[in-house]
Image (cartoon, rainbow, N blue to C red; front, side, top):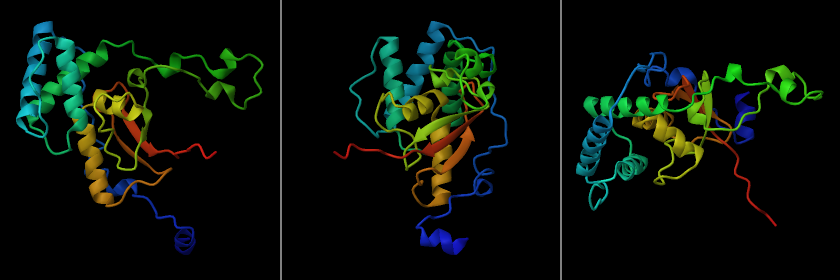
Length: 223
């Protein structure tokens, strides 16, 4: 088997047991279903988080906007471009409270209540239609055991501020602890992720439990 893998230039991926303890995969992340934040509390949290991120001096920010939505966008953008390294316990508590509140404001989707292919397309010849569901929506509202993230080979999330790719959207809603877990995995791996390989992390502030990160193939126009 090893000889054949080398012959085909395929390097074995990192096994789950090589990183599951380091990212505390088996520990349940505490999610507060009852969290309520007033507009004043949200504003205070965002201001505090912004001041901490700006004080890190990793990028220049001309000032904090007065409008809450603009401040919230700035917070997301700064977290998008932040290189992963440990954050204080207070920072994580505050960002988690904010993200959990925002998650609970969404219309959460229970996959078990969605119609399957058999119901949506009567007479379909697809095999096992009762096992398949076709759904389009916000993946960060999906209350599933696990969701799939289309990652890049760095596996650290999208660093382009406010980019609307699935990688950025998932990391932004899950919180900065997710990027830190991904860094731990990649530090152990010591190589870029291969197309088709996958790593699993907790989903943190998402309604799902886990995230499967995988690098998909890049298909370019070859006219």
